[in-house]
Length: 61
Image 1 (cartoon, rainbow, N blue to C red):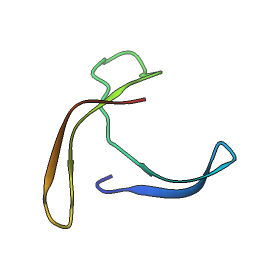
Image 2 (cartoon, rainbow, N blue to C red):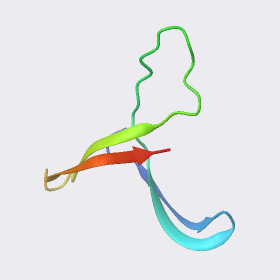
Image 3 (tube, helix red, strand yellow):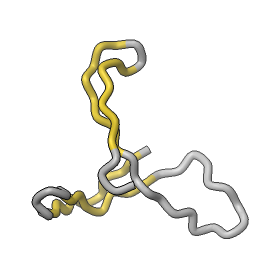
Image 4 (cartoon, one colour):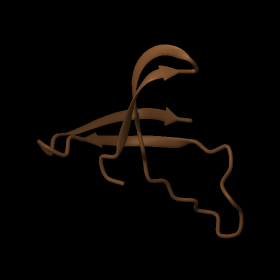
């Protein structure tokens, strides 16, 4: 899912232009399904310029 995103004009029925990115995550537990998870963003990479941005402690819910 490299670089997949969706643009929307409404969020919770309110006019708000937003971009949502899809991220790949991994469940490290072998026997339990992942629910109510957190994803920690390590870095962002511009696929056109290969420029990488590193940001510390970004939490996605």
